[in-house]
Amino acid sequence: MMDFQSQSLTRRTHAWREILGIPVAVMTMHQVLDLLDKNIATKSHMPIAFLNANNANIAGKRPELKQAFDHFLTFADGVGVDLASWALHGSMFPENLNGTDLVPGLLRKIKRPLKVGLIGARREVADRARDAFQSMCPQHKFIVVADGYFVQQDEARILADLEVERPDILLVAMGVPQQELWITRSITSKHCTLPIAVGALFDIFTGTIPRAPEWMLTLRVEWLYRLWREPKRLWRRYIIGNPVFIISIIKAKLSGSSSAYGKGLRDTPTIGDGVVF
Image 1 (cartoon, rainbow, N blue to C red):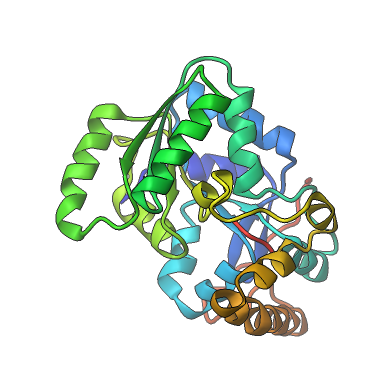
Image 2: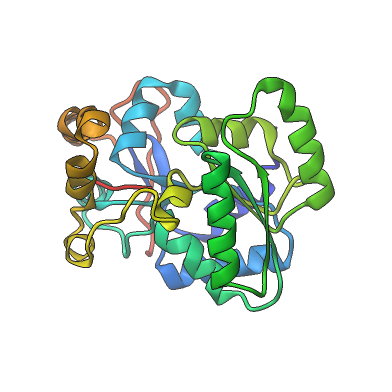
């Protein structure tokens, strides 16, 4: 199991809101980058995840994923989570914090040399992502630890390699819920400082999956672009998943709770202050 100390400290010192039973940090990009920079500098273990409508729906069906989110510092990814915050707490999140923008921003911000591990995607995609990151940020060292298709018999070797390398940042691109569950189950402070669940980041960063045009990103309708590009694979996520998410928010609002998914509801104060729906 993972080291919970840094997450507990973050909960005490940073604002967060509960979205369908999942605690989500209320922070700006600037605040996040400063926080993660400090965590890396002090080698304070802190798992990072992102919440969007799709993985909120999956967490509603899979209690182990919902429980796993309790062990992450989780950021709001997408207009759907923003609308949920407005409906349940009266205001939206300060910024959209998706891994596609946050991870490159963090790597660029930190000028001192870091070691960054990559796990996930197909091997050739992971290799291209490593090369692209290396070209973007030559001050850091990027290593591919494993692709995302390793079998259980390989896990002990991978974890042993991570203990030897102990990267400052470990980018885990296995998809939801595998990446969050694997980090929760297997990754501790012995293996890295910041494990980050990054979904399709390697594919997007290398152009394997094209990103939406800038105007769609500005309007926050990247999900429409992805649905247009991959209708057979993504129609269920968006055509069915988006209404399911909206219905869950309505149920939570009507029940007077920030969660519509089962037991274990919490009263959560509103203090201070991938891809997406």
